[in-house]
Image (cartoon, rainbow, N blue to C red; front, side):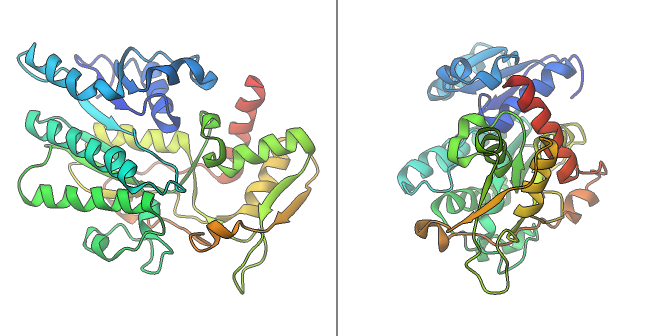
Amino acid sequence: MTGAIAKPILVTGAAGFIGSRFVESCNKKGIAVISVDKPEFFESRKEMKSVDFGEVVAIDGLSHWLKERTESLTNAPISAVIHMGACSDTTEMNVEFLTKNNVEFSQMLWRYCAELKIPFVYASSAATYGEGELGYEDDEALLSKLHPLNPYGESKKTFDEWVIQEEKNGKAPPVWSGFKFFNVYGFGEGHKGKMASVVWHAFQQIKDKGIVKLFESHKDGIADGEQKRDFVYVGDVVSVLHFALNQPLVRGIYNLGTGKARSFLDLARSAFKAMATEDLIEFIPTPLELRERYQYFTQAEMQKLRQAGYTAPFTELEAGVKEYIERLNRRS
């Protein structure tokens, strides 16, 4: 799906972090889009100002829009769906809200794509892995055995399992893939506030007070700041989403990280270096309400995506942080 395709790609969560960067990449590739989100987000989020979102559809009215637009044509009005729209707040405890936004809305889109034979690509999450007691292998046979640490992770797991069952029942789109995003960082996440990456928070803290605050370790054998995550640059995530459509990835749920865990100390030092500032790090207690749900290590197993043909290298943490902070500085 490159260049001048006849029909646009529908992108949900288009005014969100990953969705907006995907739309921005489509602008550069000359790919038309239909952008779905809350209309006010397109106006209020300054990081979206340079993006051409094409036709904008209110997320609350998407089901009606799809029905109306499809009935007025002889076939589907879109070429594919990139479904990034969801509640991504890992501290959200309202299960009913998460079920509506992360499960039922996704099911509606899946059914639409299955019925009209449209490719469907969606966001799952590494939060489905919980503490990682079973490792971080994207083996679909392990889905039912995973134990997420929060309702957000449960909502993503629920949809993953439902998708596999729908496929077994012969009710799947012709091409589909889901991606378990690990810790994505990059330009366009400022609106997420507390849920923005540690890179974004480090930039703000260094700019304001010259210091970065990191959580203390509350686990024996792990030093303060040595908690590790698989940090993946948003530019790499966007590249994989295009690969999923262009290859295409016929089916499956895949990890999307770098395959290389790095510490929060590494991240903070990368931010200081990118801002040409001396390291100054303060360790603070992890809030009590987060401690039982806090992951100390995540690292994506990436063989499955590699075996599917994705060969591009992933951006090293230092390079990604440098590029991100340079763009933040240009917009500050």
